[in-house]
Length: 410
Length: 212
Image (tube, each protein chain N blue to C red):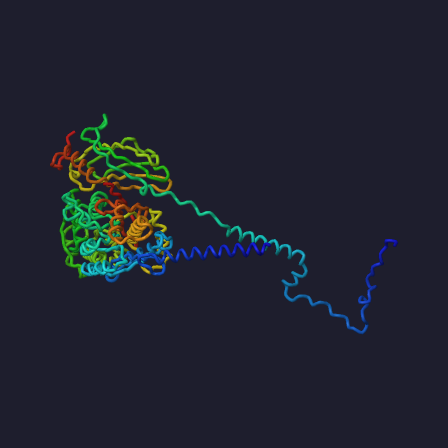
């Protein structure tokens, strides 16, 4: 009797399992882009994957990849598998624009992460906006991207509704650096250098304005050619100016050698920069004399964020060769924001992607809100991150060490 | 039946007990080679229970060491990650406010986590001094907005910017996780009110000290 009961139960379970399997198959075939595992949604990633800035770019790409893997593992969106399509912009606006066009042409792409450089973003925004394809940058800090060209005069106008970012802007970063340098580092005479690019010149501008308002003096200004690594002429000018600090608007491939050459010229004064120099590569390039150099960067120090701890552990476990660098957490959050927007759109459309999925995802992005790696992730009316934390770091030995953090509450 | 069984054979009464005179006597078992083995043979009765006890202890220890443990509780968040500060606007100065001073209101809220104690509130300019009500230090309640009245006195006009774009307040906070100094950049409205207040006291020419 007992054996007979067992056989009956086993048969019933097997029949049930087969029925469920059959149901599952029907669902999978019903997706808009069936690939055997339900609908596949592609998230494009654009960043410099080769060249001088590849350390930051690869951190962005890997972190976006990690977010999609995590979403797939947790089945965050029922019936949807995410994958990334990463493209190399080599930090060139023209390449960024070509990549944007390529991503727009792929109907499976429902969102784009990147780019690193504000100048590259400028060339991509219209392409994405025309296609109603949402773009979330983890790294662009140029204020004009979200607030228009006249943001400094108070006329803030959002140029593109499809553009969002998870990082804070130079409207906060430059002045905060100026406040720190003037009030706490007690430096009153600055030599300002930039690389003439959108990011570098913009950041140097916001720093200079605030430094002057605080009563600081500008000992001199110079622009450098980012294609060269010989800054000896500028270094001599810095030495002769009597400046007690240098502010550099630009990125670490130039900032590292610049810092080294300024010190070698005899000006033993700190170089200060923004998030573009906050990289381990800067310290390698600048050498031992960079101790005491300063950088502001977006967000709070990773060790202060419990959510970041999990991200760091998962990143390590995933076995990526390159470090997540300054924007890894922001890239993860940007990608997760796209995933959350897709989830909302799918849930609102009876579990399937609608025909106008891109437009709907862009619309949904405005109201996305979740606790991310970098804190609470949501966007204001300009597409800027509502979480505006930033930190001043100082080179101590071979590492950047946090010295002060602030939160913009305006 | 008498109830008495057969008599059991005694030693040497069995047939196989009698040695066969034709068969050579079997040699005595060889003593085990090695000192340890010899010791074991001699003290088998003692060694075996000890070995069993050691094995038991080792097994128990292993089980204890590998027992499933509950994950340690997450440490509380850093104060800077849970404290928010909002600028409320200009406030009338308190009755005992010093000359050349002005007041502003801010709201501080601890969004989650354990209690946070506010140990200090400062501003970065050398020509301004700051006092606050409630008096410091004070303890906060989580999820409860605390209104703080800030009164600043201009002590040296030349050391105060009259139009800083992004002024902030530094707040020293402590909870069970850490003690931190964190800047709260209160935005354009705060910057504007601060500039206006300083300008009203120092005039547009900020190079002179206020007269008491």
